[in-house]
Length: 179
Image 1 (spheres, one colour):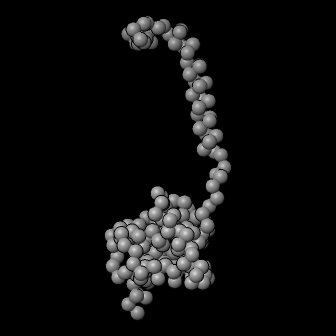
Image 2: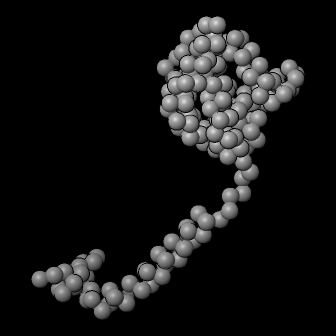
């Protein structure tokens, strides 16, 4: 005998199908209401503005430098040069940008807001150029740490740079370092 035919045993009492079926519309309405509230929340326009491109680039470059648990003077100099070259900043402006973003890096929980800003605000070739910048930071101290390599691979995926382009960017950086 099917449990609906015999009735349900809830809390030690037998309830018949009619009583249970009267409760279902109420449950459906309540769950639909919660579902529609959730959908409205998810469809709501995003209120947070996208990260500034300069900040996003600086944060990710600094994160690459910190990834091997040491932030050398060579890495600091490379990041300052890259920011000056990329954004046409003076030495003072690059230093201020780095100082302002260092606190963000220490508090950072996820890369997504910064990688999203780069993906949205840079065309594909500039994103490949950004991966080159990350490789320059990673190799600034003369050693590629596995954590740095993994982070660059992750960022490349998040900004939709193909593996081939990531590897070619690495090779270009290594060639410049030798030459």
